[in-house]
Image (cartoon, rainbow, N blue to C red; front, side, top):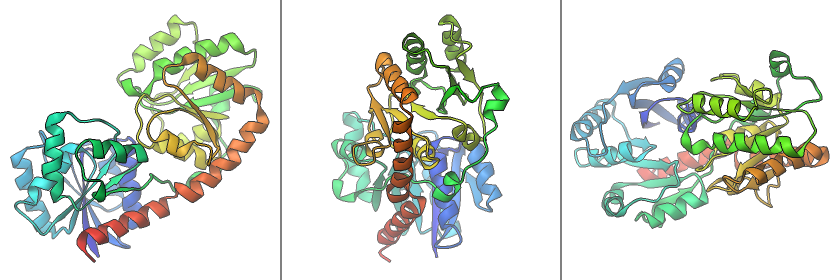
Length: 366
């Protein structure tokens, strides 16, 4: 059984954390023995410990933290780790440098961002990624950008994110309409992104303002999460007079309840690699409108035909797309059926776990 140490700087509650957790749930004690190490504590530590996974803290101040390199090497020797699976640049560089002290351990990296690097990082990438066994890009655009960042395309494998189809595809009777006093005739669209600069909430709120100008239909927009821009967004809603149209729920653990109570999901992000939230929503059979950014086009396209792509920051265009789906029940039904098909065929967690495990074996030459 392969011993894998998953290494993540911040063990919070975002998409990368879901990626790590779902891989561990699928593979641990079946094909691998999983361990987890982190720098900043968060919800993922609690969740993994509940699954019986041993967790360890390693302070990682920067990508070239020599003390962290030594501690990681020492931990890997103690646990007899075969492979470190990293998620971001900081912990990836630290893991690669740790191989100088412990050549037996292999390192594999999943890149969750589509972000161009500067000249210095491009040089460092060329040097350090020679120590990498395999690299996963979660979308096709991610692979292209990594190659432009100085990483050898021969090491990069595109493996889309995936979700547990059985879990998300099993309906629940949603309570949100009763909770928020929404009648059955009101169209509900949801956004569950964290309130951060790159998630585009201000753009979405402006689109809701435009939507009010072009429709007489009743609707509610539910914004569910927390984050540093939450109060700014609440002020924007108040300033635009949208207090009766937009509902802020705060952070919720019952996201499936929210999805099944919604008619549509909206992703308004400025940057995406391959959104877990979008795939989870599609697995529930709910259509999606998303910005035409990076991996979103791998999910929503002419082949899958399960939603609509819009340009980022085009609030009128987003409003028109929402209105189109509000008006066309038949189109929503078509997108819903195609959504389930796409997730089963392309974004299935079993497929992701098997392909990732095969890369573990390839990295170790098993």
